[in-house]
Length: 423
Image (tube, rainbow, N blue to C red; front, top):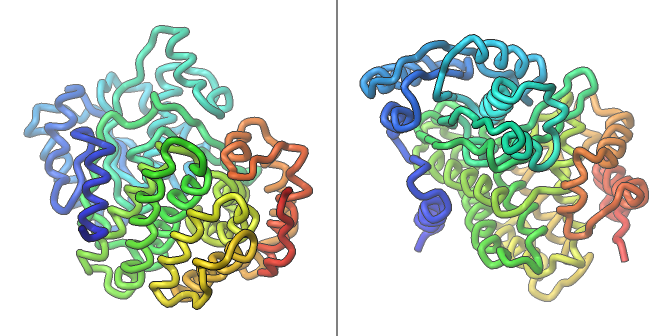
């Protein structure tokens, strides 16, 4: 079975009938939404060429007997608080009983949180962390309005997951709401929408997909879902390594676009099995200088060296993928511990260089030592402690300066030798 076929199979196994994906499926949104409600708030990203997609959605909703009671502009990149609050206030003026959202990860994340604030009230800060939305739903007896998430970018997996990332642009810090109750009720991804994605945005999304699967893979060692994650990560990373350059060179390459859509959907599946950790945590403090996927792509090789002694079996599997792609000549079968981590990290860095990505923080315009200080401070924030706990080498806030500090310094310069492994 090819990686493309296995990816489809894994997604169907994980999502069942709640997810419609593939080329040309956008027109099914009306019937999907009609099963959930009859009055829709339509939230959408503004991006070049989106009008034909919006027309398809409006026509499909009308045909299915669903009335669009309000149209709301979505969120800017990283789902800023200001956009969340604006979307919440607009939602409050409607009697919508279903929310249809067309957008990338930021708009879908903001739509999830806007519905939380619309229904439960309060400030967004009280929901950051794990399970707090569900707790308040139980206490109040209220229910969230179902969301139909229509993904437009092969990237975050926001249409499939229990996460909502919201950013304070003033402090430059992103935080997370994590709760199964905010997972969209239904999801659609028409891979044809991604044909217009520019090369840089395409790469950002694809590397975010790798980050999701890689980080959950590392965290899965010794856990019941490790076997499944080995397969999910193998397919995810293989598809991105094989097809990303093709999609960047020819945006209309349908097979390559489909492969990246499947890969990033598998990344979304991964973060419903387990949690991301180090690279994602650090990327939350780099939002003013880096896209999310690019931040994760820079950081993951350095965290890989730190995690290596605890994740040897997954690392060998990942190393084989990069070796088969000609990105390393290292004998990943015979290496172990830190040396294996160094070899795989160097292969990951080689792939980033090949697609024109920066590989150190020092290369990034606008980077300062203040970003490292911000990242270290954020890692000690109780609202983000799940990222520390999800590491295969778990950290406490007291360990952050001693171990995460050298990782970030290594990422600044590219000197892997600076990384200190924990006992």
